[in-house]
Length: 134
Image (tube, rainbow, N blue to C red; front, side, top):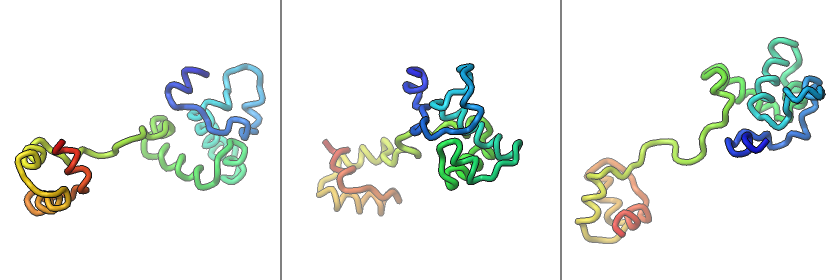
């Protein structure tokens, strides 16, 4: 359980998992294992023919979540069942060239943000500019 928690793979509502496969005391099927629960939810629908609503409810997910899980699985296979990493999704907007410009320029954060947009085509918030200058 600790390993699942550290990896961010704990199901937020393991008590809501009522699917029969998780009733066994073998210890193999863990309702707290979010990836396993997602996989079994998809399998219950595709292989066993259980409706989406029922499969989602039996595995502690909403119907909308079922479709998100299914799309992620279709796109990425088993890797799609692992939640996306939290945090920044794209590259930083502050390139070394922009930082050098900001550190050598004078003016308010808002003024410099406008200059960066004009000169580099990158829109920055005034606070981002102020942080880059300090």
